[in-house]
Image (cartoon, rainbow, N blue to C red; front, side, top):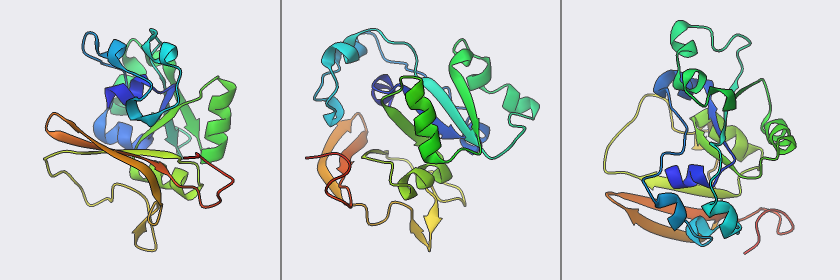
Length: 192
């Protein structure tokens, strides 16, 4: 997960994820790990010099429908708002997925990582703005009464998304599945 963050210019989460998990959303690579990243990693066409070069922490973007978030003491104490990278945290209120990406593009953000939660992931899938996926399968059962992605008519928002260039990699006890989303219209999105 940290290598994915290293490849990203911004990480997006919803306010619910901040409330539930208090994520740091920072790059925490082991010594030397950043220099081992190659262009082939994660199937990206990224300049290897850019990957290996020391880079700042990615922007951390919190999406919310609340006009007052963070409003509770616990929300204001979240790592995103109090750590040494707090100045790299943005709150975007009532923004649709395309507007979020347009705003980030104005900030020279080229690669965005959607880390959750389910409504955020679902909204970007429903808007047709996801071109690549990475799922980590871990040997642990987690869960709540909320689905991990937004549902539409009882199906995940990404149901039916066709995948290309699927790859699997064992990472310790976990399994990473990586793929490109095949665009519905052959003239749009990533090309094989």
